Image 1 (cartoon, rainbow, N blue to C red):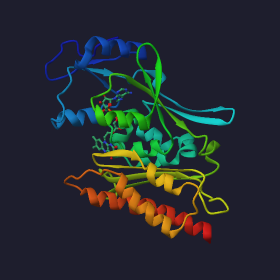
Image 2 (cartoon, protein in one colour):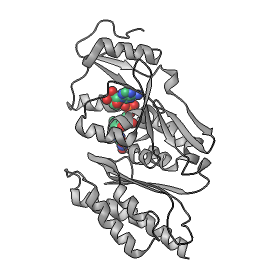
Image 3 (tube, rainbow, N blue to C red):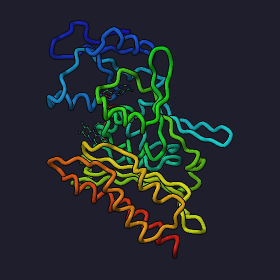
Length: 307
Ligand SMILES: Cc1cc2nc3c(=O)[nH]c(=O)nc-3n(C[C@H](O)[C@H](O)[C@H](O)COP(=O)(O)OP(=O)(O)OC[C@H]3O[C@@H](n4cnc5c(N)ncnc54)[C@H](O)[C@@H]3O)c2cc1C
């Protein structure tokens, strides 16, 4: 492994370029908290340039690790998964045919993050590990699992569980996120059934920070009694926690869609999501916007199924 800056200038981090996961892991063990993993570096650079976090003394660049790239589908008896390398750039995510077919909410999320120059460098792994990335709601509605590398091997962790863990311990990860695994089984092999939506509400139409970001995945044709057999709802926005709206999901499952039910969903979304209050939007505004956007999508479904 070569360091690209052997002189260790005080104002420039020393960059390490491991060739594989094992080398990256060893570098992290040797450098401890002085070494930060870097993928596209777009978030890290912004954080240290704005003084939010100190510039690390060492950067462990993951860019050269081939096993962290690539997108492929895995089909086993009765199940399907979509594997996405953590180094997949946001612009590749926005254009990948397999992602578009199997997880269209994620395609839309990638298209709506930052401007093209950032999307060409920024990665999906880095977006998730920011803990507030716009891709997270789209990944949550696809039951995403994080696959970590930590020296002795790989471990799997549901994205939802990791987000819960981060609420208690938001410190940067010491493990390496190798790839993301989406469960596309219930959603339908090759997206043959169901529909997904991703909506980002910002203060401007394009290239803007999110006020509210929502995603949903559901069966597109309600059963004969008008109920949904599959539903996932997720929300985030600004520095708010990104969560699955499990209470609204429970309300929706196996009950015929109706105006009255949608009213309950609207209240439930606002009650469950602890939206952040900041200079861009109040907590109440965020909650209302999220409830309005999600209920509007469900309303469209109700209308189309009754026409
Ligand atoms: C102008 C601008 C606009 C932006 N707009 C948006 C936006 O609209 N929406 C949005 O969600 N984000 C936005 N971002 C934030 C950022 O660009 C994205 O979140 C991007 O996806 C981060 O990916 P990265 O590869 O650059 O991460 P990096 O900066 O390389 O890393 C981010 C964090 O993750 C860690 N890390 C990265 N990859 C791994 C890994 N595989 N294993 C372990 N640790 C890892 C790093 O140590 C660091 O803590 C914007 C940034 C800029 C500069």
